Image 1 (tube, rainbow over the protein chains, first blue to last red):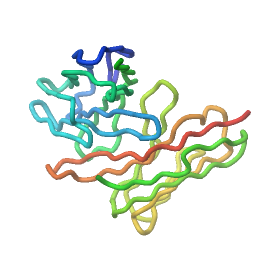
Image 2 (cartoon, rainbow over the protein chains, first blue to last red; image 1 turned 90 degrees about the vertical axis):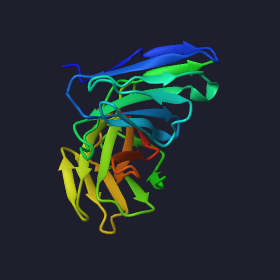
Image 3 (cartoon, each protein chain N blue to C red; image 1 turned 30 degrees about the horizontal axis):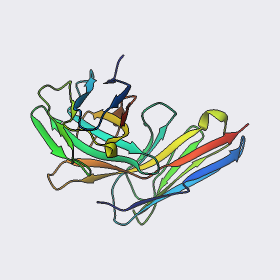
Length: 113
Length: 114
């Protein structure tokens, strides 16, 4: 049982490069979200989606784009990476907006040099 | 955004000791959650609290939803080495768009000395 799968697990980018962090879930969950985790800061919400075709901004959306063309996939795009985006990124899914059990992927550790 | 204060930031305890951590918020909420993150993994839900005054246990873990609905605590009894990790409190709040968001505390990093 895969749950929430994130790829890649590690990535190093140069400033200005673009890349897409992939997230896929096989639980038919409606709600998906992206967080970044920085030391001493907890997890901060970047973007979220309440269903295919619907996305919205979280607490720290600047520098990131998302789309939700299918229920299963919720990719996070960095159009022009900056050192401030060095972080660990987590994707999560849950079966409904008010469903409190969010299932998290294992994370993507991104370093921007 | 919501003000969510979690303490302590870190703890070093001897195996077998009890642990207590807490969270306070600046506003009233209807749902408090506690997650645990082990090294190299994503957070996993431990306990969810839905009513003021609610006391819920999950094995050696006990969490309570404060009467004022602005605070919650998590206790771990008789700690063992596998309790090591970062513990997060989280709140479920309604966003301006009408959907719900999870807001996380900054975490309590627990180290257990065998």
